[in-house]
Each structure stands twice: as C-alpha cells, then as structure tokens.
Length: 151
Length: 363
Image (tube, rainbow over the protein chains, first blue to last red):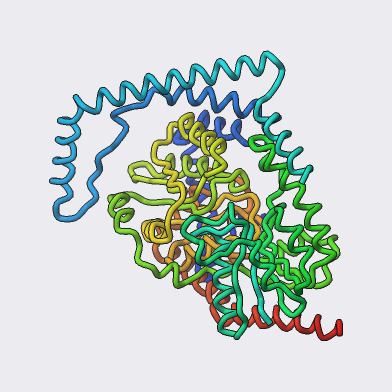
C-alpha cells in the first residue's frame, strides 16, 4: 500500500476517497491546461537554495526592478466591501478617483520617472561591480563577519 | 530566588518577547521576582518600561538567583550570560540552518554558523537547557548540556482574544477566500513554495476570488521580499499581499478573515501560528517538517511531498467540504488543549525544581 500524499487529522473523514479525488482533479486540470506550467517553472527557477551565490540573486532582483519601476496607476481595484452602502461606496470612490486623476497623474508620472532613474543607476553600479569582478553584497558580508570575529 | 530573563531583542508581537512576558507573569504568580533585560539597541521604543537595559542586570545578579537566556542566534549577550554567577537556563528557540540565508544574506548565514560554536561554548556553563520542541532539543544533540527539558511555546490566549482591527476587517472584506500565512518573510519559510501552491489553487478554483495574505515583517530581509515580488510578477499573481509588520489587533483580524492557514516552511523549531490559527477555528495545511509535525501532533493536514498541485487541490476540496473542514478544526482544537495555562505553570515549576535540585546537589 502506498503512503497517502497528505496526512489528514480527522478520524471520521474518508481520507482515501479524498486523496483519490485530489489525484483525479489534478489530472483533469492538467489535461485541461488549467495550470500555468511556465509560471510554475518560474517558481522552480527561483528556489533560493539552488542559487550559486547572492550575485545571481541580485541580478535577478534588479531585472525585476526594471519591470516594476513603471508603476501602474490603474492597479488599485475598488471592491465592494459589503454592508448596506457597499455599492454606493464603490460608486463614490470610483467617481472621486476619476475626478482626482488630473492631480494624481502628475505625481505618478514623477514617481515613475524617479523609479526609472534609480533603476538605471542601480544597473550601472551593478555592471561596474561585475566588471571589476567584485560583488558588493559579498563584500559587506565579509566586512561584518570580520567585525563579528573581532569582538 | 529571583528568576530574571535575558532576551536578544524585545518588541511587541515578537514570539520570544511574548514568551518572556508570559514566563514573567507565571514566575510572578509563583512568588519569584522576574525582570526582562535585553540589549538596548534591540528594545522596541515603546517597550522600555517592560524591558530593561541588559547592563542593569548586574545589579540583581548573584549565585542565589537564576537567569534565563532566550537564545535564537549568536549575540554579544552570550559572553555576559556565560560570565554571571547566577544559575543559568538557556531557553533554546532554535537557530535556522545557515544554508537558507547563504544566497541572499551571506552575513546572516555567517552569524548563524557562528551560533553553533556559541552554543557549544554556552553548553559547558549552562545548568539547564529548555527546548521549545523535541525537534529543537534533537538539534542540540552532541552538545554537552548537563540537563535538558522540553518547554514548548504557548499561544497567548489573552492576546488572541483582543478585539480585531476594524480597519483591517473593513479593508479586506468582500467576496474573497483568504489563504493566510503568519510569520517573518524569511527564506526558511519558503514563501516561494507558498506562492506556487497558491498559484495552483487559483488555477484549480476558477471563478473563486482567492487571496494569499502573508502577515509578517520583512525588515532586514528586504532582498528576499523583493525576490518574492519578482516571483509574483513573473507568475502574474496579483492577489498576494505582504502586510509587513502587524499589530496584535491587526493579526487577530487577519486570522478572523482567513479561510485556511497554509504553511510551506522548510525549517521551524516550533510553529505557534499554527496553534493561533486553531484558536480562531481556521483549518491548518502545512508541508511536513519535524517542527510543524510536532506542533500539530496529528491534527490539521500535513503534505508529505512538495507537490504544489496536489497540495492546492487538497486545500480546495477540504474548504468545499464543510463537514470535513469542521472535523479537521475539531481535531486541531483537541490538540490546542495540550497547550493550556496549567501546563505552562507545570513546566515552569518543573524548570525551577530542576534548578533548585541542582543547587542542592552542589552544596
């Protein structure tokens, strides 16, 4: 008998049936292409213990910064939080948001420009460090280690 | 006998600080004066009344007293602890294996490695070592501690019964199924696995609004936080929320909002949030590791493999089956009964008896 995938702490439950349902549904989802295997592959690639060192991690984080520096000003869903005035609240908030757009647009634009500049500087610094064959994060770490050893 | 405590930091919401406060209360009930001391740089600004500067401990140190040192990593306090004439208790809260930090935080990894040597040195001068789990004590095997005892962490019901933050309840209200994780955003918590499981859950539960809430600080671990944001972006996941540090009232609100507690940690000494979730009637799902298995004690749902798709589908089917969900929560509540106030007092008495037994033997 194979060991079930999950240990379920419930005496009365039909655990074997549940595990059969789990396997069947996963297979059906796979067949239907429900899972984003490319995205799951990304998760696999981003397993920290598999990284050779912090240089690789920093490179990837800086690449991510480049992607996220251009902030999306439409990225704030206004949702109905329930209650008797929930729908009215959503309507009022959406209206206020639209009315304020002329004002917030300018702030967001400035923020976006600033973000892009910071990323550009970070990338330049990182390229320079790599070309020197050094890793700033590692250096900091070694510095601290030395300080720890001295105390 | 006065029984004072030394912590490596003291701040509101911190598990070790909460443990020290509860021990202080129990020791007080048992007639033992107990004050908490810490390194001044690591005492939260609002905590100066509850926690004193470690340098002040010298004024109440003596061979007739005891000092409990809450240990979670290498610290300058270890030298002081080793030097005092008091009877010494090392309260071992666990040290995370350095390999989890090596890639992103090499300096932290180096300090964790140093902790192992630190513990070896301290084991020679400690009268009693308390481990918050059997697994924790196992990790100390090979170190020459004279005596060890199990002293598990306890969820503080008084804190959990505080009214939840209305602002959080309001902010996160709506037609969402909330999957919660509570803990520091640290590499050993494997938040990347949590995110991958959540992605599979979303894929298998079309038409359901799902949200993953990760409630915990990432101060000092910002690079890992950035790493996780990158992962969410690459996986095109928008409903993952990192709350950062939360107050007790906010935490209680997140527990109230949660439909399931999901833990993907790869290393835990003892996992109090699993018991806290139980307090709020939230079913717990976790990947199987020794510290988590010991905390759950056969309750909740444990995944034996890191198979995100099957784990996600198990969560989904349990949440859909209210009878099964209730049975699982009932099992968790039974487990929670083990961690009640009388047990805490009993463990404290046992600890004191071991210390006093030591002093009797020595004279």
